Amino acid sequence: MSKYDVAVIGSGPGGYVAAIRCAQLGMKTAIIEKYNTLGGTCLNVGCIPSKALLDSSHHYEDAIKHFEEHGIEIPGEIKINFKKMIARKASVVEQTTKGIEFLMNKNKIDVFTGMGSFKDATHIEITGDKTKTIEAENIIIATGSKPSTLPFITLDKERVITSTEALKLTEIPKHMVVIGGGVIGLELGQVYRRLGAEVSVVEYMDRIIPTMDSAQSKELMKAMKKQGVKFFLSHRVSAVSRKGDEVMVTATDKKDKEIIFTGDYCLVSVGRKAYTDGLGADKAGVKITERGQVEVNDHLQTNISNIYAIGDVIKGPMLAHKASEEGTLVAEILAGQKPHINYNLIPGVVYTWPEVASVGKTEEQLKEANVEYKSGQFPMRALGRSRASGDTDGFVKILSDKKTDEVLGVHMVGARVADLIAEAVTAMEFRASAEDIARMSHAHPTYAEAVKEAALAATDDRALHI
Ligand code: FAD
Ligand code: NAD
Image 1 (tube, rainbow, N blue to C red):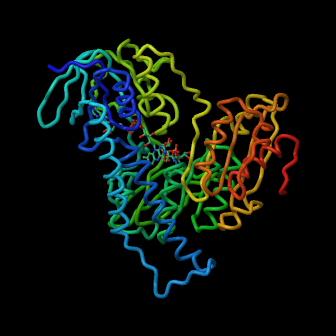
Image 2 (image 1 turned 45 degrees about the horizontal axis):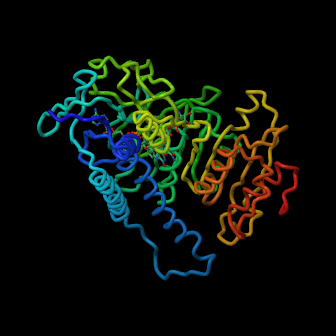
Image 3 (image 1 turned 90 degrees about the vertical axis):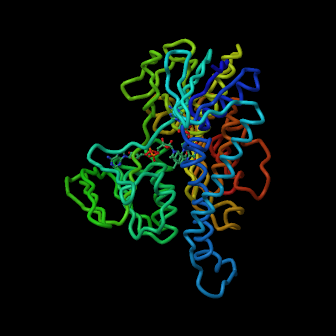
């Protein structure tokens, strides 16, 4: 039987990063993945394929809507070859997952393909082509998550679908009814809207992306409405049925008025849930919470001292970079180091256009905690860079402590803010004040100037260009 210092179950951005860091630190490492390709949800059916389709559909939208204003004329009709768009996405996924195989090889990590299941706290049975058992001194559970649904919905995966199917449709929907105005609903809703589908987003709360700053919810909804997406907020979905190629989604609004949405596809995007099916956690004695997550302490250690868990399968935001940070943390703990994650500074991004990005506390959270703060906001439309590219939607908002001026939260909507948020994370990691950011030189003309201007606005209400 093969013996390892560490075995990682699951090869998503949590698991594969944990494995690489363990190997870098000199541990003999194995990784177990039930699918034939490595990379987990993120690389196969999450971050990467969704961004590939967002980019392709964005190019198409630019070509049909914006090229002309730039003086670019394309004779003849601009058409979508949807099959090719999906094939390109598949090829991006393939290159990326192959990259993980290369990294496993490079770091001399043994890869086992098959379902990993605890026999006890140090032995894992792997059921693949052949059944094998391996022994490991330490085990990291990185089994990720699966889409959630509502109790009355039957996901037939043809017409009533999750993100996984929405990433490999064979036709462009005529009318996609999206249940849930969160990250998945908005990113994939925007993809299909750009490609010509009617898209109706039915959201239970009174705003979209309800966990982000409410100013971002408003700004993104305004921009997406201009793009033709329809929103039905404060609507509670009560039934979903299918008749042939038609799906019917029944919802009631705040006044208890019933409305039926009829479409050809219904995307169910109401969140994801931790995945531990078939893991045999009970055989190792690992505690699972009522919400189905693996319970961990601050060191991401389960109740069984040699078993750790990371990523979507534990508490916290379900984000690839959060999973990866946790993978690194556990590897370093196993190597005897004292690593730390600042959970307050895990940025959140929605890759719609305009993009949405956040780090730290929202205005709602600061009010709730009775923290006295200052707010500085700068609109993208006042930037030369935004006017040059034609991306004038959005803003940067900086919230800082009223007394100390320390930056407490940064919330952005606009072009490339997914990348701009890194400046805010860096500043906050070093506990910068708004004035620190305001005094730093930002290249001109860039979208990043909005960060400086918002910092100036927060410092002394002294933005220069508004
Ligand atoms: P996963 O990536 O889910 O990986 C878990 C792996 O474990 C899977 O490969 C699974 O097959 C395997 N596994 C499970 N059980 C077993 C077992 N018993 N034996 C062997 N293998 C097992 N996050 C972002 O940060 N940015 C984004 O842009 C983004 N976009 C997304 C878009 C979509 C459509 C979706 C669905 C998610 C997106 N996410 C995004 C979320 C991101 O994908 C997850 O947060 C991330 O993948 C979690 O990583 P993980 O390693 O915890 O788990
Ligand atoms: P989400 O939690 O982002 O959004 C779910 C939405 O559904 C919420 O707005 C919620 O209020 C709404 N909802 C819940 N029940 C409802 C009901 N009965 N009727 C109508 N609306 C209802 O979840 P998601 O969009 O499914 O994404 C799942 C996870 O994947 C997220 O936690 C996210 O972190 C991750 N993800 C991240 C990215 C990214 O980082 N860009 C992209 C996609 C997914």
